[in-house]
Every structure is written in C-alpha cells, then in structure tokens.
Image (cartoon, rainbow, N blue to C red; front, side, top):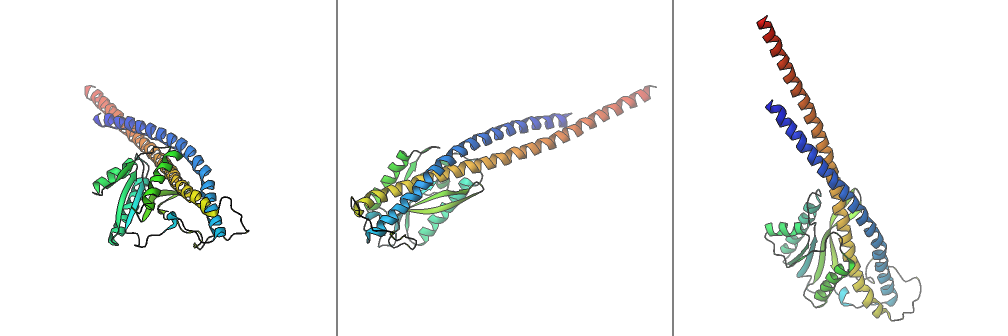
Length: 290
C-alpha cells in the first residue's frame, strides 16, 4: 500500500513538471519567433552598412580614422564584453558562452595581455564571481534590448578606444546560424579592419563624387557600423537563447511524458499485485472456515 501511494505521488509531481516545462516551451517559442523576426530585420542593414563603408573607403583611396587604427603595442589591454542570459534552463547556452570567454581570457593572459571584463547577463556575473575574475561593469539590457540602449553602450566603447584606454574591444556571444545550429564566437568590435587593405574589400565599380567628402562620410558610417554590429550581436544572442531554451524544454517535456508512462505502468502493476494478494487472502480465509 505504501508503494502505491509513493508511486501516485511521483505521478502527480511528474505531471506538474510536465505542465510547467510545456508552458515554458510555449513561451520560449513565442519569444524565439519575435526575436528571430527582429534579428532578420536588422541583418540586411548590418550587412549593407559594412558594404557601404567598404565601397566608400575603396573609392576614396587611403583612409585614416581612429576606429581603424591598430595599436602599435600589439593590444596589451583589451576590453571584453561577455553576453550571457539572465536565466538558466536553456541547454548549453550559458555554459558554451562562458567557457569560450574564460578560455579567451586565459589565452590573453598567457600572452601577457591585460583583459578588462564587462558582462551583460546575470549568469555571467555568477560565473565570473565563482572564477574570481573581476568585472569592471555589469550591463542589463533585458530580453528586448533597444537600439538606443546598445548605441549608448557602443558609444562608450568608441570613446574609450579612441582615447587610448583599450587597444581592442571584443565581444563573446552566441552566434545564431540556423534553428539547429548556434556557435559561441569571439568577435572583434574595435578596431575595425581597414576596408582598403582587407582581402575581401570590393573595388569601386564607378567613380564617385562625394558630397560631403569621403572622410566626413566615413566619420559617420564607421561609428554607425560599430553600433549596428554590437546590436546585431545582442540580437543573435537573444535568438540563440530562446531557441535553445525551446529545445531544452521540449526535451524535458518529452522526458516527463516518458517517465509518467513508466510510473503509470508500475502503478498498475503494484495495484494489480495488491488486488491479487487480497483475493488470495479472502479465498484462503474462506477455505479455512469451510
């Protein structure tokens, strides 16, 4: 009897867990759909502004801009922004990003480079606190970061880089490739690669007459390119987080369903065994009295 009660309690608990994970799966699916639509909407603009920067720089010839200037001391001081989630239950999302960031930090330290760490997401804060890695600044932009908020953050990085506080600015985030594939990536935000020296730089297909001049255009386009690239990184991170949570919650729901069926089978067996035992006892008692 005690065994039957225990199995019944477990069945109730598993059904409750299954309802919770199913609800979380539906919420993650809705968030993923919205985030994917926003990321798809910004990606063409991100690609086009990079292409435009390259075309203007190629048509203008030699380009000089503070955001293109590589430091002569081979990057002795680096600012690293790690983008993680505020919550867990999203599969290997947080662990992949945080392991990649920690590996990058250790590799830079081995090369005698100083890494200044900033985070976006509560999971990164807890992880680096456990690893005893100091965090300079903690950012919180939420599940739906606005371009204005990301732009202000990018402006801080641009000012710090041009002032010579850092030799490079890099971001660790989860790159969204497809629904079934996401990969952690270390992306260099600053300095930008010079479009006139990059191997894939397009050649000007026609002669341009700039108004205003090419230098002034690049002074507007290059900072905008940095802001858009940072915003796209946040968009990819949010899409990846939600799709991985959706997959993880679906797996949890399926596992709970399988466990529930197993418990139901065990319950029926235990109940049948108890009925058989009671019938045997009744028949034995009747036989003894007769």
